[in-house]
Length: 290
Image 1 (cartoon, one colour):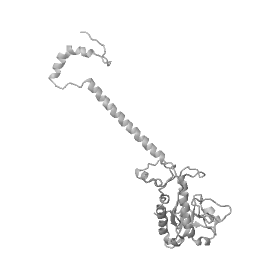
Image 2 (cartoon, helix red, strand yellow; image 1 turned 180 degrees about the horizontal axis):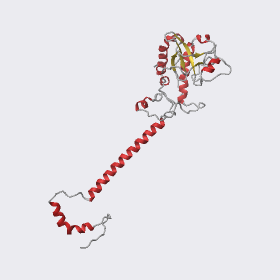
Image 3 (cartoon, helix red, strand yellow; image 1 turned 120 degrees about the vertical axis):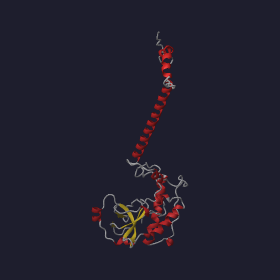
Image 4 (tube, helix red, strand yellow; image 1 turned 90 degrees about the horizontal axis):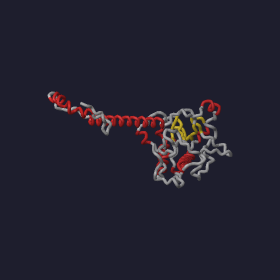
């Protein structure tokens, strides 16, 4: 008996195929008595291994994709995962507004119809919100409007102040409109407080913010203020420091809806807005229209 060790097209040896006729008599006879099932062929085993290998590769790729997705979420939100619900709350400005044209704010509320007094500032802010809602600008007051150039997880956008985009022009126009509606309602009580520059410089930190003083709420025994930078009303019973004879926005041109409310006129020294300590318990629910 000779063995031919030649290989077939697949590189497999064919010696076993030549041996099969000579040993088939004894091998098959011995196996036929124990079992009728033949062992799986080489091709079946090879196909099974290929299928298992493909499944392992698929699971490994899914694992890599999941890790990359989690790392991207953590890097965009300072290492904290953002839930899908919080992602849905981030919205932009009203799509019905034509941002290629200058934004037109609503007509000013008549002085005779304005609600006066601290106890009415809730209803009065509702009227401002409804007026802006008719011009599709209420998102700037509710906090839903965000700059399209703001990166995810960033506190603010990096848009230069020297070249305002349409979004920031609209935001400034809304700020000017709101300030114009409350400038005539500023309480004269702010002139009755003694200035305390030395105490203010020592007590207030760099996180203090400038707000407009609207009045004193007897029920809560606290001040009612408006933050023009965040478009938000809120009361506080913390310390508020005033300068004498202050009247914010007195030198501003009310006819210009895009006036720069942060601009300081060197010819007018009366514009020194009231300062509120950052430690106050600001209420997000007190936003305009909230």
